[in-house]
Image (cartoon, rainbow, N blue to C red; front, side, top):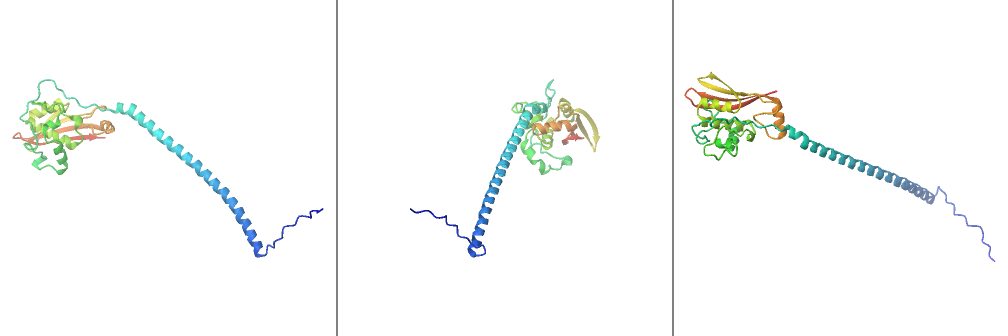
Length: 251
């Protein structure tokens, strides 16, 4: 009968030997690997949490923008609408000499200087006085020039050109005064440089402006910073139209 002897002891390795140094270094690497693996897991967990927070913040921001847009669209914008000027159409239309367009009445600045190139785009948009009227009035055989398309004009140059077209068509200082008054202007006349200037002044109310601007926001802002608007037309002593223009006084 064989009796098992004591278990053989593991061979002892001298740490000073090459084999001992290799074993110690391997143990250190193993421990470092364990520690590194734990740190990597922690970093991944932190990054995952940060990513979730970023997504939540982005979603919250988008939701806030959507709510703000809905409030602006449903509540604010309808209250910011600026009514368009409605002319006084009582009585017969104002008579006119002819329907002016660029070929018969080229646009000039004062002193008969040709118009600056900045106005060329506006001239191309409004070559005919009919283009300055409300859309349903343009095809009329004898259009009513009082039905001026204030809402369709989006800048001072457009308005300068269209006022020039209207006054060229009317042909006289007296008719230009009647036209300005039909649009709600308070008129005055004064002599200057061998001619007569007719000014039409208008003070916009809080919810009303002659030259609307572009977007709803632009119209609303314009209506609240403009405190005076002037349409001016200058006639020579011999009755020729010299100049027509528009200006606004703002805060």
